[in-house]
Length: 94
Image 1: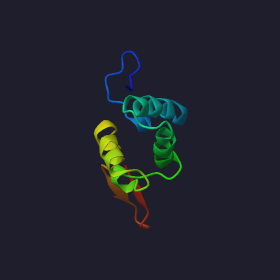
Image 2: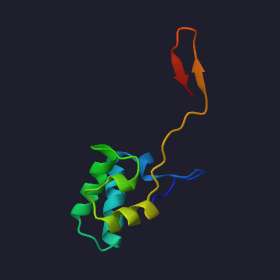
Image 3: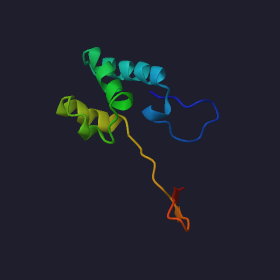
Image 4: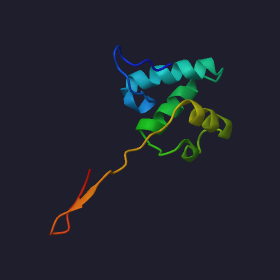
């Protein structure tokens, strides 16, 4: 469903899309699942208005929908590879 641009060799997630592109992709997915159209807006809200770290946290969505979303759309998060600390205690996360 989320097609990478020509020549792109990585993986694209729903969070890589601009919000308007994501709502279009979600609307397409919701329709393909046979769900009511308003679900796309509910899902979109949980990504950009009241963000969640995992689909399980979207308790305003039905459990079956959260499970289907977890299977269809990964929610990757940033992780620090290195933490540097200066002499004054300031930390830099890389």
